[in-house]
Amino acid sequence: MKIVVCVNHVPDTATKIKLSKDEKTIDSAGVSYVINPYDEFAVEEAIKTKEKFGGEVIAISVGPDQNKETIRKVLAMGADEGIHLKVETPLDSFGVAKLLADEIKNLNSEIIFFGKQSVDYDNSIIGQLTATILDYNCISNCVVFTLESNTVNAESEIEGGREVIESELPIVITTQKGLNEPRYPTLKGIMAAKKKPITEKLVNQPEPKLELIKLKNPPEKNPGRIIGSDASAVTELVKLLKEEAKVI
Image (tube, rainbow, N blue to C red; front, side):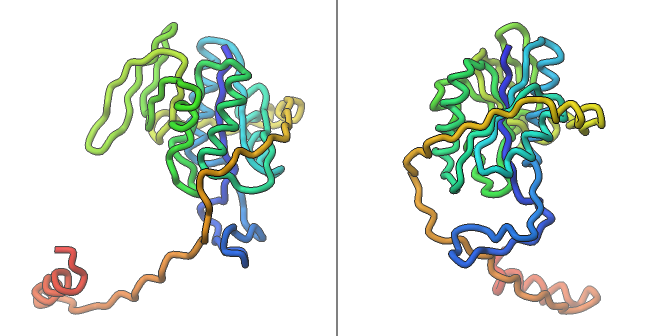
């Protein structure tokens, strides 16, 4: 069984982001990059599936040279090999999904794990787009996953509850926090990862469906103000929430 896990290399959420002069990219100077946090749940579930059923885990990432750092971490966690689909300029969601789908089709993998979203653009759509291009079944926001033979039983987190879903391979699973507890790379795993192969492929970028016009920082928040320190302030607070903030 070939199990694919798709991972992204993203800015650490604790890093302060500055925009480049062209206002279409971020200034990478001083920015720390990490594996996309939601992808760690995908990696853990892929490795657990391999441990139960055998086979191999293949990590795929689309992006520039720096993405190899994330692939190497996935190898240290327990994946068997990596594939780096190298592109130098950012892609829209369709472009990323198209490249991933083409590679997955070549691998003939029937089970693919993604994080539910990437914390850089937060589009929450790459897994679903990839499944659509491949014509695979798809379960999103997965918090419970079991595989028996060719049948998948899962629970998907939705607003106010969970969906219980049964499906069949081939399938794309996008993972949510709560599905598992990702393992830390061990020293043995880190050393072993240095010998595991990462295949680099220069790929032709698909024609974009979207054009990025401009990035901009969110507006600064207005400073808070104190309207009182006892019960006498309640009436004024309610008035401001209703007439000024318009939230009630």
